[in-house]
Length: 326
Image (tube, rainbow, N blue to C red):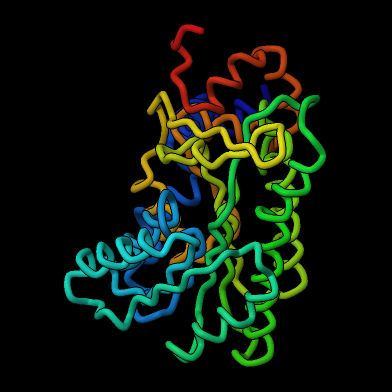
């Protein structure tokens, strides 16, 4: 009663509307706010951004969004032909802000750790510097927890965690030793790194691990900007390459339901996060935003477990409408 006497019922109504508005956004509030009122992506114009996994999906969408604002790019992935297509599209979307020398195609297999230094040297030889590294390469997973072979755990961690860490450490040392301690490192993580999702135990664990690694970097090297970008279900063909429960096996399927955030929207939000140097953010169509908020607050998590069963969480994980029949 004392609370109501001090603040009045209007405050509670305002708070209720705020929360309702917040949970129906397609990203966390800070990212949404910066996308409308924060620093423009164009402030990155002329900077050099190296994107791994740039041949398709979120990496490609991010590259296109940055190119529109005159950001110089290094595009890396295994498939040279697709990288060349992305470069062509970036130059077209830049509307003359970029020339062909401003987009470097650098094919690489990120699992070959021994070649990371060599590839980074090519970046420095071409541009003379690097401003932002975006670790986007990685694969998802679909598997039952009890059936996952340990080799799958190892293989997924090698790609989604250890290769990312190794390349990042190469670049961070450069930032600290040759760039006055300044620089920016970003990773494409996942809402699976902020919550617990079914049918992706190894992937979920890997994303939690990489989020923790980069959280520690924030604490240890505060002069270096870190962005941990956590998308939910996105309309890309990620399932084609996703791990299963067996070694050397891929899901090999296209997504069946498109109740997902578009790759274009995801790439735009990622670019906003980079321009505004947002440390931790996430995105996804409702109810992804709400669920991440719940998982980050233990009391709410315990309550919601009584309301959401595995099938409901699975639908959200797969980017399906909750009205979809099983």
